[in-house]
Length: 94
Figure (cartoon, rainbow, N blue to C red):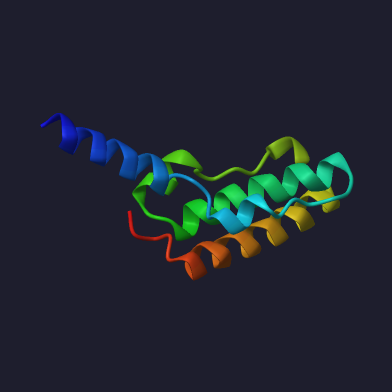
């Protein structure tokens, strides 16, 4: 029984991770751009991923940055990139 619980725990923790290719990608630029990209990427992973990804990442869009064009542009780019990277990795299994 302990082995099964350990296997399930490991599977869930691995499933919640970003695909390895996304750890190599980091936006350069101002802090607003980096924040927008990170929030958009997390939301993209949540949108494409399964239940575990939805619980881990969720929807992130900061209302205080609503008028910041750089944040909005980066959010859209991060969302698109990470969503399709997750689809390519087959990350919607859980």
